[in-house]
Image (cartoon, rainbow, N blue to C red; front, top):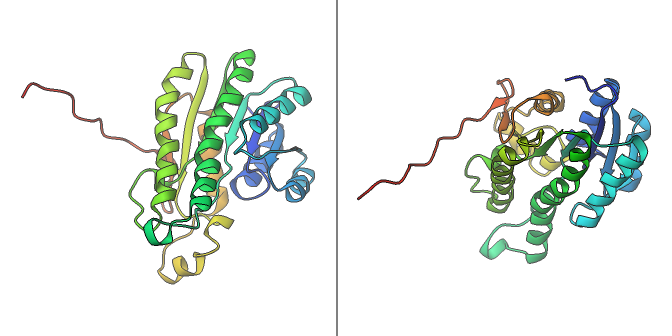
Length: 247
């Protein structure tokens, strides 16, 4: 897939995977729209990479619709959506549970993907197809005892993508998820030193972007690609559940 002249919308585009993916695709000739709640940082990033910027709080479904409308109005359509906005939770369960932080994390990390798909699909239908990639995490593929709420919303993204992917593939709209491990972005700032002291490799952002761009171009739909240190980005193979049988 050539990204030249493709219209790409990226949520969480002001920094991290969003910024790096936007820069990569703009360099390949794509028309990139960065969407982020951080307006000043988002506009600076957009100016630096030759992209457009639109303010977007992914917790609000109307904001996702407005971001897609902006891309369509500026460039005539939408080919690719990278639903990347995400935050850490800041709370756990029982003694460390905080309802406000819980709601915020679930809204950004899961609702933002739901609202993004709802907004992007109609525009891609008018285009005759498209590609949606959502940022999940290795936390969406395994148990995460130290942050069960983050695991819950990332498992939600994985389940959403696996379930929606085959449906929208019938309309030539591919829906997939990228599942990185600990990568060098702001989301690990609070515990990066601990990871390093334990000798846990931190993944370079460009390595994750390689996986994101490959997945955008993939003909598959409903798959989850993991990105882990020491491995090439590749599809995570899920086991099928047992079928029913007579007792």
